[in-house]
Length: 258
Length: 308
Image 1: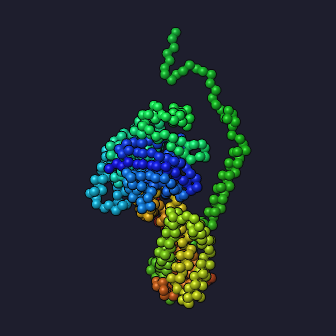
Image 2 (image 1 turned 135 degrees about the vertical axis):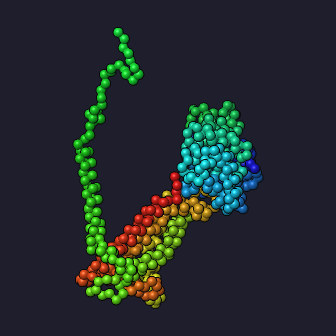
Image 3 (image 1 turned 30 degrees about the vertical axis):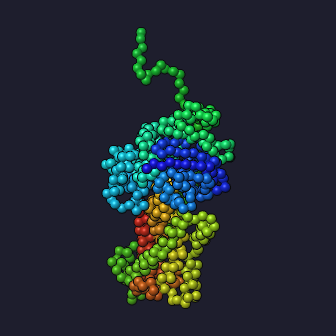
């Protein structure tokens, strides 16, 4: 069910401002790719183009190619809503729907897309919560509001909600930056489990996290202040952290800048 | 000689306890300004309170006894002259409620949908024009709304003056308040919730219907009820478009219709006590209905669908 992502010569704009330039990279199925780099270099922007969330922002547009198993996501015949069903996303801050219970939050993607079969929904809710390592903590209070959980639990609830629609790819935009170390560990373990089924791309500011969870790491940086961000280097995580080919990457990772 | 020291007990050290002087103390000037601001604010609050208490007090004193009579809630003014006591306000209460209900039925969909357009879809020139128009509508005096409907309804189309025309005029006054309050509530819904929904592959219109509006539902309803309470007290369009009658008239297309504001207006220059009592009673009834609507609005705000 996991799919490969091919990005080729991707330029990303906010209105007239070119935010990211010339990104090309490949993400293999059932692998974890980490995007690292200083703030404002376009990591999240690139991530959001992978499920066409970038264009939700007024003025947001892209040039270049993003393909999912050879299917061009930006082809004119492609429905962005369908793309987002295939490529799920977890955000920086946990954002459960405040009007919904835990159960309804997980089932939201299916329910809002017209699935009514209660038995099926219950099965998906249980499977997704188990998949997100949350089932044991919430199985007795599925009807309680999702916003009542702790931050780490809420984030796992959001992961459960994202995998409930059975996407092929899971995008994570700094999923742990609002969480404490223990919740972070829980999410990282979860990423390791999910890897067997999904293609995962994660944006992180935490380089140890990138080293721990990812197979491949992409380092982004700004050319210069006011210039568009670009992909400096993408390679096996092991290599990036031990022997990167670009000096900028080494400087960033060793803490000499950024 | 040995000293036994326990944890927490340390050898005496020369210590200076910080005094106010170390921080420069509290300057007399600042304390004075603080007091002055406090007195000014409380003074302003109390002055603002005077007319409110006065109005409530005198309406209660002069009209309160009318509301205690069973006839007030059970009879109209049919066949009652200014000289005679008795009769009730049912015709006016019904008229006010019917007109308010129909006004709400027209204004709420238009107002809420306009707000949804402005917040969720509106970009560029059209949105700016719509927003500007709503601003202008907000400032329209009620008598202008009444005269405008009169000009269209009676002068241009040649129809009779009818209670339904009052509803149209009140709609003009209610739509902008509904648009503005709904807009504020929709803006309060965090963008992250919309994005979370899009990221699940939920189309935009469904995101608005199932996520954005439910999240802001209680706020929208509160805004609507407060807007409704406001138009219920409007008098000018009623005077222009639907003359008062003492009998029960519930047909919006029937010509005359009694309402609380016009009932007050009807007898306001009377000198006979029974008529004056009715004026105060009607005023208190109107205040009471608007008060209840406000309470209802707050209650709905509390029983919000947003759980935590």
